[in-house]
Structure formats: C-alpha cells, structure tokens
Image 1 (cartoon, rainbow, N blue to C red):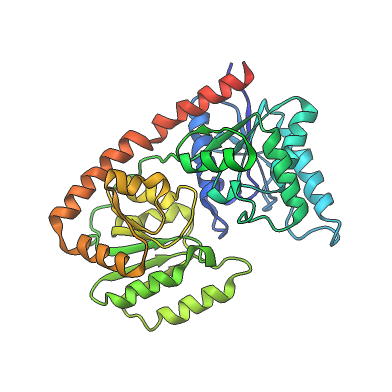
Image 2 (image 1 turned 180 degrees about the vertical axis):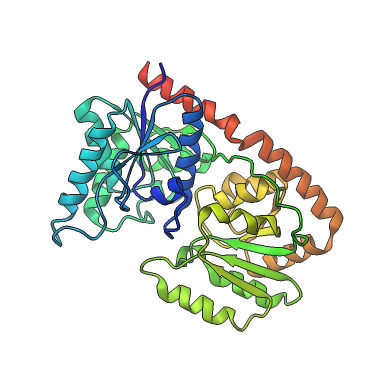
Length: 371
C-alpha cells in the first residue's frame, strides 16, 4: 500500500486551485507537479497551506487541503506562536500522513521536523535554491527562524537536492548528503492555431532585487529592433523596485510589461517566445528553464546550474550584459545556430526533466523511508 504523503507548503493554494493570488514561486509549482503525479499513481496526498478562505479539508483534483492559519491575524509579537505554530501543528495532525515533505529553508522546516519526531513520522526536506545551504545568503527573516531551520535540516530523514552544486554545499556546510532528483516538468500542449509567429525575447519571474530585472530593461533598450516581454508581478516589500521597472519600461518602446499573470496562464507567453533570458546570478533550478526547454526554446542566462546550459549546448551561459546582448543577437539572426540548439534542448528535456521520468524516483524514495 502506498504511503500517505503530506506537503507543508503554506503558499501553494493559489497554484493548486488555479486562483489569481500573486504569490506563486518555483517551489510551490514543483510541489504541485509532484503531488498531482502521485495522485495519479494512487497515493493519498494532502497539503497544509495558508487559510485563503477555502474550506478546511477541501478536495482539489484529488488532493486534500488543510488550512493552517490566516496571514496577519493574532497579537503582534505573539502571533508567531499562535496562530502560526499552533495552526501549522494542528493542520499537520489532521493530515495524518506517513511522510511529510517540505521545500525551502524556513522556520517550517524545524517545526515539521519536531512534529515528525513527536509522532514518529518521516520527514523529507527538499532544497529550492543554493542559498538553502548557505546560511549567509539564506532568505530567513529572523535568527530564531534560522535556528529552527538548521535543527529541522539536521533531523530530516531524507534531503532532496536539485544539483551537484547543492550536494557540495550541503556537505560543506552541514556534513550531510542529499538525494539528487532534478526539477521535473509536465510537457505542455502547443499553442493554439491562429497566433502570430513567435518573436519575443522573454523574461519571467517575480520582480524582486535578487532577480535583477533591470538588466532585462538594459538589454531591451540596447536592441531596439527586437521585441521583449517581461512577465512578473509586485513582491511584498519590494514594490518600489516594481514601480521603478514599470516607469522605466514606458520609455522602451520595444518592451512590453505584462505584470502579474496567474501561473496557469503564463504558458501562452512562452508559446510566443523565441528564447528566454534569465538575469539572476544565483537560483536553484529555474522552472522557467523547463518551461522553455519543453518547447525547444534556448536560454541565455547568467546562472547555469551544474553548467548544463554550457555542457549540453542549451543556449548560452554569460557573465556580462554585453555577452548576453551578443548571444541574443546570434540566436535571433542565425537560423542554423538556433535550429541546432533547439534540437539539443528538446533532446535534453526529454531525457532529464520529464515528470513521468522523475516521478518514480520520488516513489522509490518514499517507499524506502517507510520500509
């Protein structure tokens, strides 16, 4: 009998239910993909998420969703304990799973580890970025949260990593080993007939400082004959950056700012793209790469996880804006080069990132944990 699996993913409900809340990150998308695969395989799957007003225990495509707490409720300075910690703990109990899975460094890691130790359940932590194993750069707001995270990581029954670089950081920082399971993606249907020919240079992500979106504006301004499209919404605490990007974009006529787009609608922008640009210096393994590669789109990026772009010729890894500009021009103007890279991309995606290929590795991991 397949083990019951619960995902602690507080921000995942919009992705699960296809609603229009703006908080959708790569970690949430990956967890939903894995969960839907496991449901198809006959697993009993649940999620613990924030309270967005949905009924507790709601069924979404075969997945049971339990509410933990509503944001911005409770008494200041005490809300960390109640309703946040108490709400998460109670929802985890209602889920009553054999295995609990959590992704991204945060206080939830430690809280879930403590819950699993208390109730003799298995805990799987999954990395979302290199910064999860680099405490100087980890995005954890409070020192106490960081202590909880380190405790939880050390108590995990298994740690899933995305890249060999993450394996090295995990070993170097914590002396622990990880299970390498690359990010997965479900192939998407082609664009509906009747659309214009793809012609855009595309950037997709949350408009936040660590993504360096203004570099994309610099790129667009330097290539006035190409069409550029940016997809991404305002992020809490970084609204000034978003406003600055939108204001500056008004002076770049070949750049279209789409703003926030619900995740289930983002695919149409990839369908109209010729290539995808990534301006982040560090990531985990970007979902935008997989959204591009399942369509055969080259990627030009400052970040190259485990040097896969360079090793498999999936586009170009660059280290300067001038180099990025030149590689984009090469791809737009050299049809033979573009066609060759497109074939590399499609072959690499089929061999390494298809959900149907990686899902069984999660099944094997979960079976081993409960054996």
